[in-house]
Length: 296
Image (cartoon, rainbow, N blue to C red; front, side):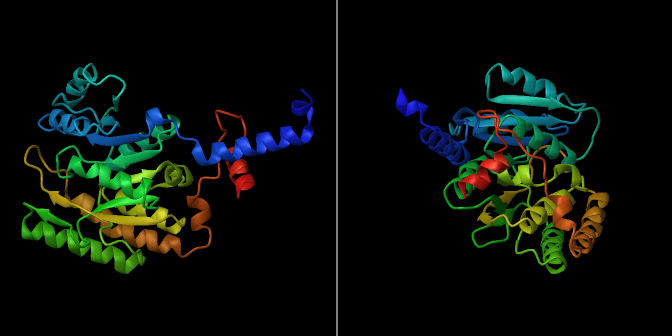
């Protein structure tokens, strides 16, 4: 009993416990979440969900549906009975944009302590078999953000017309030239984030809602010092449903890249972008940023 009464023992015990929590605080039952925004994806949603769950890799899926009039949300709800505790849905009223759908999903995932959060399309342009490769890049290869890249060695596109390929590659080159960001596929939408990346970025300060959102998130992660790794994938154009690409999205991308570069020239850019809210650990009631400082 004298041992437990020792002030030195108590201090050492709780210091070690705090460090252990910092390095190992992952709930194994909620490690991986795939966020899939949907709008009128009834032709694809059943197949894509089965393909993900048939990997048997313990992926959970959150569908963010923007009031699809074709009944996509109803299909997902019916499938929840088949995949209890694995399949979730958040319904929003109206078509509010890709970026806001992902932000909604990111906040949902962070609140539930998922350690790895994925972005993925519903239309099979992103192959579900590549999910474990993105996960491995973050889990075992040191990446904070893994990008499924079409434009690194081993990557590519299938079934795209030449004008769409030219637009995509031209947009990537334009983005790299303006921002200096060392990412070959900055508009990619197939990604894996470590939770710490999304916790650090002030998600309420992300401005863009279309495909420029993808560029902005990568730019934010890069500017905040996170390690980015591009994993080669083969991107295949959708077989069913209608593409959401339009002139407004292209315009947002062109103007958005210029805005990102301009804002980044000012010293307060990183400060504005970084989330400074202290997070309280549910295990100890101690601020996690304080524990991180103590563990270094």
